[in-house]
Length: 144
Image (tube, rainbow, N blue to C red):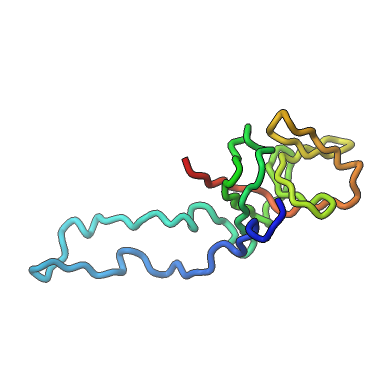
């Protein structure tokens, strides 16, 4: 996962103050339709997918190390840096200066980065001194 096209920056910087009900409606007679009182606003993906705006970033997945978890090459990962990396979560890790997306597994004596593809091997983190958790993957967006 190297390159500049992987990192998109902070997730959502806009304002959520305007809702659909704030926009006046009119028809040819000058009166709003009776159904306008029951109108629902659209779905805002920022509200649905982002819990902590300043700590949320987007990455583009490169490679197929996590394909069995449903994370494919080219998918967009929503990564939250404020979520605690517990065992079983999929994380973005920095290992010897390289970004990796793997499932984090920790037991009593050691920690591992486990791929979701049989072609790749698990990484025992005890062998590496230069390791950091960058963030936890909260959502994956991919086209069908």
